[in-house]
Every structure is written in C-alpha cells, then in structure tokens.
Length: 257
Image (cartoon, rainbow, N blue to C red; front, side, top):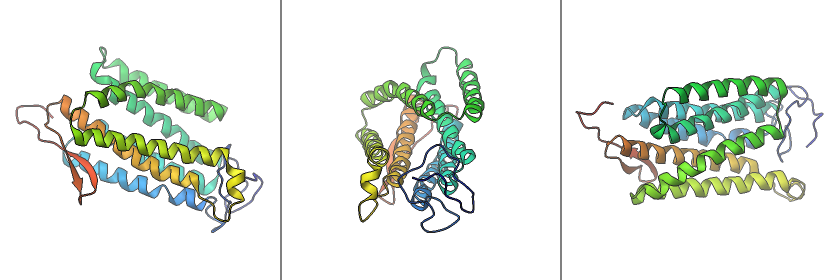
C-alpha cells in the first residue's frame, strides 16, 4: 500500500499497513474495515469485565479484560489514522497484556510471588520506552511471538489437567479461533497483491481482529475457570442467552475472596 497518501491525519507514518485501500469511505478513517472490526473485541471484553466484577473474581481478571479493551481501542486508533504514535498505542498494550497472561499462568507456582509482578511491570515499562525510541518493526513482532510461546506450555498444562468437558470445549474454541485468525492475518500479509486483484477484498486483517476478539474472550474465560478451581470456588460453565459461555462460581463463606 502507498505510504504518501495525505488525509485529515496527514501522511502515513506507521511502519506497517494492511491490505485495505486507504480512505475508501471517509477522509477520517484510513482503513475502515480494520477499524470497525475491533468493536466485537470491545463488547466481549465488557461482558467479561461485567462477569469478573459481578462474581468478585481476583482483580487480575478485571485488569485482563480492560487490557483487551485497551488493545482494541488502540488498534482502532492505529487503523483509523495510520500514524506511528497510534501504532504504538496498539502494539505496546499487546506486550503488556502478554506479560499479564504470563503472570496469571505462572504465578500460582511461583516461589517468590512478590518479585514476579515487580519484574513484569519493570519489563513492560522498559519495553514501552525502548519501543517509543527505537520504533521496533520486525523486532517487535519477533519479541511478541517469543512472549506468546512462553505461554503455550502452561496453557497446555491447564488444558490437559482440566477434566470439565465444558471448560475443555472453551479451550478448544480458544485454539480454533486463534488459529483461524492467524491464518487470515498471514493471508493479509503474504497474499495482499493477489487479494487486491480480486473483485471483492476479503478483509483478512479485519477478520483477524474479529477472531482474535473471540479468542481472547475464550482464553480469559478458560483461565477464570482454572483459577476458580485452584481457589476451590466450584466453577461451572454457563451460557449467556444460551450462546456465549462464561464462568459461574460459588465461593465458600469460610474462604477469603
């Protein structure tokens, strides 16, 4: 995609563009579909946040849902403007969220519990400063992938040790939506020239946003179930309006929240 287009936001300064024609529908929105496709992620995070508050889950899960919303909003700003500052408002929260996932996944068995959050907060702060100064591109992507890979062994362990059928189904939905979304992301990056010649643009990056929104929701729901089991809160999976799964718990009165 061309990087010299002027608009309400000025010339494009982001280091990455997607396979969508810029300013096709409005001079205020650079990539229309890539912008609005973040709305499902925001709505799903709001649903998850409501459940976390209503059932008094640990604060880490409320922060996790807010993190999902922050990423989606940052992504909307980035794709709407294609400015480098807004690009970082998308990318930096992505790293912060993965650090939060690492904390949630590994903290139950961490021997020095106070050191882990301090280290992760400092790591996130140093990355944010370094990313703003050096403007990582390929380096950011490699760094993000490495952090994601660190989560896989623990997530896999949670999956194989969870016996509840409904919870396992949520884990499978998480994996399925993540894989589908990643395939659409790869198609957008690798086959952009071919897709651009088609009569209809499939908007693969926008589909990546939609699938990632559901994948994040399923991942968060599964982790809430696993944590509730660790705390002895008798979790069970129920469905909102018979469709969207969420975790319902019963805290014993003699246990601390």
